[in-house]
Image 1 (cartoon, protein in one colour):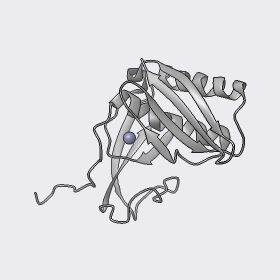
Image 2 (cartoon, protein in one colour):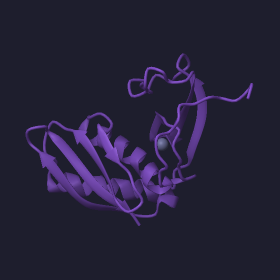
Image 3 (tube, protein in one colour):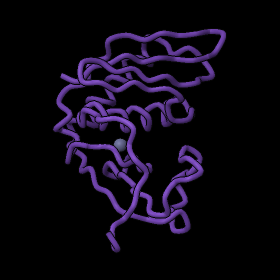
Image 4 (cartoon, helix red, strand yellow):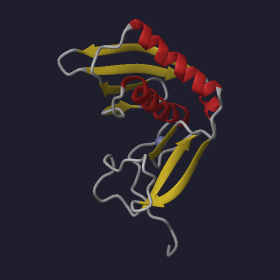
Length: 155
Ligand SMILES: [Zn+2]
């Protein structure tokens, strides 16, 4: 027990390919729309959904571009690696805002190539080609909330 690194419990068993795609989709949305990571996500084996606050409703062309980039990232076979840091030795590009206040001192950062890095203790594939194929099932736009939901599955 003495040298064990204590991390917060992860709240669910995730399907690693879909969960790794979640990381990629977060970063793809950030880069395309300048938004934050998803404010709501349900990631499951059969199908998943993630919601983002955006400043405009994505065009059909932009939706196609999301799917195209996702598949490109998968096909690039980017390595998924992790490292442990403390909240005091975090790289500048990692935000702690999504961690709970009682986050343990040791923080696991998950990197996908040079594309994305974020704190996470979930289960991931070892490289992105193991995700397989990203299939966008549909999207929903809520004009009042300016929220954009992406439904997808990994096949
Ligand atoms: Zn993760």
